[in-house]
Image (cartoon, rainbow, N blue to C red; front, side, top):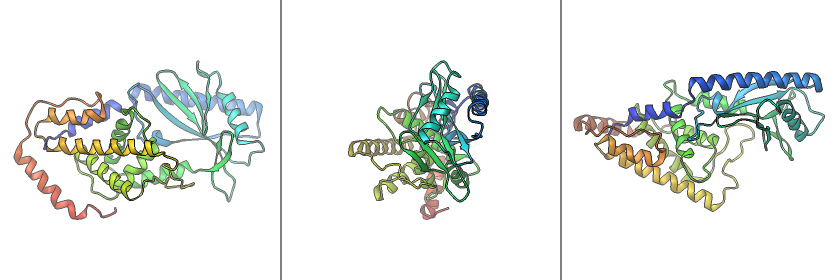
Length: 316
């Protein structure tokens, strides 16, 4: 069994947001917050924006795409009932951030996006909340919908392991999605699937084994029900509306990844094994050394894995 754990560590470092880019993103976030506060103070002083970082950046599972792009979600919250339409409030935010970047901001379905070309994007979803009601998110040309992104973050934090293995595996799976040539499930969907799968297994100390185990649990769950329910308001199914073609492409890609993961773990040569991983994770996953693994160490590892099998389906 070729041990590619060190290669997964290198891959994780490669797809993670580096310190220089992270610093720039934080500075841009602060600059945009200052600009938004100033704009509302001057134009609509009865609307006081407050902010909360959310999504993958908050959960520390954001990645750099193969094009070196990453994103940060900075929610804007108003703790009052708006007297304007959701689309109008989103347009106000667009006006507030307009001019901060060379590229015009985009008023997207559920956020306003500021684009830092060939570098990163900062999304501003807009919410309001009043006592006794759920958080509401502004949806372009539709209105307000119940949505609690903070609760999703809390759910993930309560489920992750202290060693950070789940977070690394999720980033690896998102890297796999980025390497596909068709529209894969969203990062949130993959995070939910992987987290639910993690709660049905015991994570291995090796990331190459853990990602294989998590992918297999995801496959089992989707075979029972092809769904991905958000674990917080509005508890919607992120796979609702998938057409047969998109569903089939995703499941085929999942099957193929699992098959090659199994093959990689059967091999004794690390370089040969790494080629199986690279088929799905891309060239950013490093080639291994052309060396054979110690067979006695592999036997001990297999025996240890077999001993843990009776616990495989116990929820944690």
